[in-house]
Length: 277
Image (cartoon, rainbow, N blue to C red):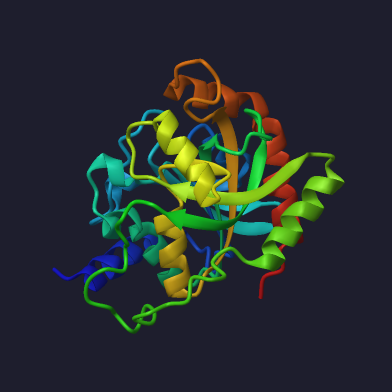
């Protein structure tokens, strides 16, 4: 069965489960330790990834593996509690399959979040960073292969994946809430290993402020589909070699738990300010 038909069948299943919800306005992808935001959604409809035809399954600890659809800050949203990663063994088309679903559902705005390592020496664990641009250091791309012109152009422009107007909304929201927020470049590595100290030095030379194992494939496919993206990284630890301490996934989750209240308040305020048609 071809890729486009799988998207159609997955979308048809989700539409049947929406129970009267006709217009989902914003998609949310919630990174490691950040899935708690979906618990704020009122009148939730929960759809397990396991039940969706041809849909991947999240295998990472702390990722629930479900969609939560409902109301948040006056917007109808669909939130992913658990995303897919290249390092799980999925190819890039599987990793970005949910973005194709979002487009098929008519969604035009997406907030993508992640837990990342700080490369910028001015950062500390617990900082929030607006992604203004990215570096794809995975040496792979979800658009490799035959292009479907109905989804997007063969050679999409990725110079403005992360939209300036959404960054402005995020900065204004953070200011109103007295939450300090950074703005920087996110570098995508495949994982699952954390970067070596030498790789972190290289990332800094290349212009990265944070490194992680997600987000960029989703951003590329969103650009292909014409979805406007806001990216937010939670700096859960300083990357390898900056501090003399080992790195672990438990540290990521612990830091996310420590700053979750600021993260929740910020995203809810951003949703309030986003205009949808």
